[in-house]
Amino acid sequence: MPLILSVMPASAQAATIQMEILNKNLDHPWAIAFIGKGQMLVTERPGRLRLIQPNGSMGAPVAGLPKVDAKGQGGLLDLITDSHFVENKTLYFCYAEPAANGDGNSTALASARLSDDGKKLEQVKVLFSQKPKVASNLHFGCRLVESSDGTLFMTLGERFIRKEDAQKLDNHLGKVIRINKDGAIPADNPFVHTKGALPEIWSYGHRNMQGAVLGPDGRLWTHEHGPQGGDEVNKPEAGKNYGWPVITFGENYGGGKIGDGITAKAGTEQPLHQWTPSIAPSGLAFLRSDRYGKAWQGSMFVGSLKFRYLDRLEWRDGKVVREEKLLEDLQQRVRDVREGPDGLLYLLTDENPGYLIRLRPE
Image 1 (cartoon, rainbow, N blue to C red):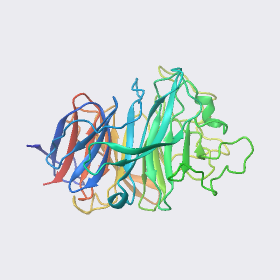
Image 2: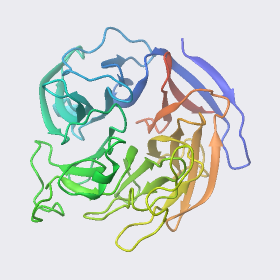
Image 3: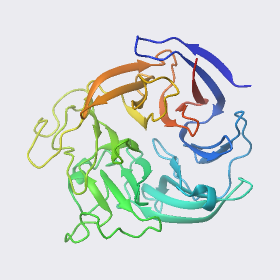
């Protein structure tokens, strides 16, 4: 049976909620996808995909995944269902893909069909593979969003040791890319006709984006890890430069400026919001339902890996007007947060054992 814990509100704006632990036997879970009838798919970073029943139970891992390079921050990462999943059973997932010669890795995106019995993946197809492969176990990015026009957005980290490449258009490091569901390049991508630029690129100058979602405005929202300070929320637009590592509100680990130590420069975009000190954000959801009351409806929810809480942000006119820390007693790194089809929030904690949690209004 799920374990239910009451959580008292931290302020007058907070809802009183119950934290229902549906499963506490996951190994570094990374992403949740809802597939109907109360069932969920959860990725585990070491390279396993789990089908979880409404009561929280799970069986053997789903078979059929491609080879996953599970090292450091890499492994099996984000997962979403196709907007027509009920009819086509199609999934999209991203993962750390090893180089064929064993020298390095990069972030890849694949599609697959979930078998009717939910036990294996069929028709697995790699749609995109980040270039170049890099000998790094850091900064894979790897969040996926299906846009309202049916194209796929994917966030890509700059692999930490290659931060300068985030400013160059001849590689995929530190970029948001946009492709069609068959892997083809949309004709209206911003750099399709730019000589020397990779046509998949949507925006550039990013560091390590581990949150992405379509907002209530129908646009792509992301957040990304800064270095020591300067985690950001952005709305990446076609062809725009988000500055890393030329501008940042953070500094080098242990201190010291990055580049010229500036926070703004012509030709680069400013974040909509930034956290200093860093909270190490992961997972991103806008709550559309009123299940927790009107005060929470429309809020943004972000997991904190560093401080182990759930962050709630209220926005007005493009700015954060209230921020609230929730579940501060959880003591688990919050990796993912999503709104389920029931209008409730679901969390994953990046631990071993890691938890799948449902937040219930009391």
